[in-house]
Length: 359
Image 1: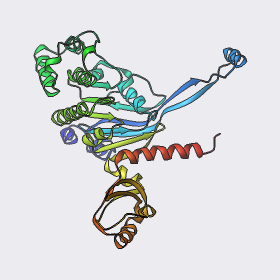
Image 2: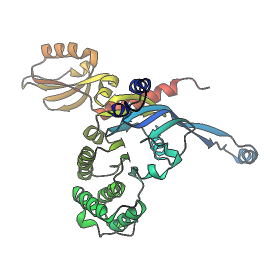
Image 3: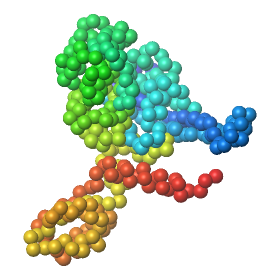
């Protein structure tokens, strides 16, 4: 549509160039070969080594983000997954302009984040589950008024947005209560309101449900799903809670040791990285499951029901043998839970890394 709009004003050669480019005009976030390296002081043990360190300091290089590239379209909600220390938060800080990369490029809504232009800062928000932007001893409504002035929101828009957000997040009656008296789940909902009052086009969510109970997690999930769908806001979500990811995102980027190891549909993670499936067996009244462990790893044993973990390529053979040997009332085959597959992925990469020779 954008190319057609300019077609009459620019040469046809330029139109063809724009049409054939790999990065579409609708990309909200474009990251190319982004790297961030830190120098960390290496302190030697002992008094003599400490004295030497005063004259000659030694440093280790830590690659927090290493050659990361991806595109995110406008209105997309994407999961950004990885273990602690994988580089997720560092990437969000780079895209928020809080830190500067060692190398590589990135644009968010056409802006280079670390230039920290006012035009960009008014178009994104960063919410973390471990840091707060609200005044602890004041009611949340006072912090919201401060945000109104910082972002220069006119009174009419401010009032309508605040009413909409407080009703959606069910915190209207808590507006006059000091933040320190709110529960963790209530505080997180207030943090979301503060982040969305100025109607950002991009929202970075770093562990927004960390430490929340199941009810609070569900409320945040429901709100984010509804708000993102209605506003078509671009969202990057990091979370160790896979229920958040499965409820909200269709696409995932998996990062480990600062490097992207997967970028694609969320469901492809299980297909690509899981080596096993789960077979659930319900044994007949006159059948004993004795010896079933030779066909796979017993994950659960509850009376007549047993859940087996079996290698993918052996599922058909195992089913044939089990059905021939035992009296089975019901059987089902399912994929392993996403969180188990991701945990196994990170564990296997850690082991392969530790087994590789050091230089």
